[in-house]
Image (cartoon, rainbow, N blue to C red):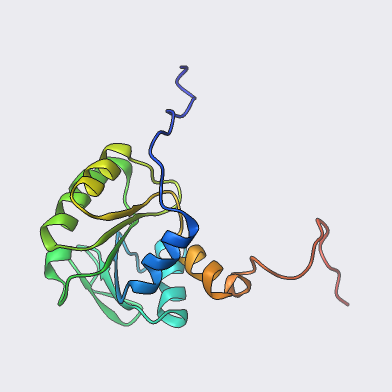
Amino acid sequence: MSGSEAPTRTWEGPSAPERLALLRNARSVAIVGASDKPSRASYFVATYLQSSSPYRLYFVNPVAKEILGQPAYASLKDLPEVPDVVDVFRKHDDLPSVLEETLEVGAKALWLQLGSWHEDVARSAEAAGLDVVMDRCLKIEHARFHGGLNLAGFNTGVISSKRQITS
């Protein structure tokens, strides 16, 4: 395998009905790596979840004081409740420590965002009884199951590769 090839993926994630059940059963979501910068993916996901989901949201960022008008917490153990889902926006090398903290607080599910894939973390999390989702966006999955993909321009009803010209 050359340096540019991705490692073979052998872990198999939950099916669409299983992901839907996970989202339906969740009441609270902690976003680890949440950002107060509007250009960051975590901010976009947080704004969507805040406006379009029933979840109690918690933002975990050790340097931010507030995100989207809510307090930011330094770690999962500082949250006022145990989150059902830990949604992770952290780099690959940080994922084992995020799993460790997720297990310490007793969360039920670990959700690694688009682009995040760590088979050792997934297997360890599953062995400890957690539900695991990797390389999927919680916002996109929620919107897909709840008819909200049009909120971010994913479903415009227009099938074209050309820009619409308005006068």
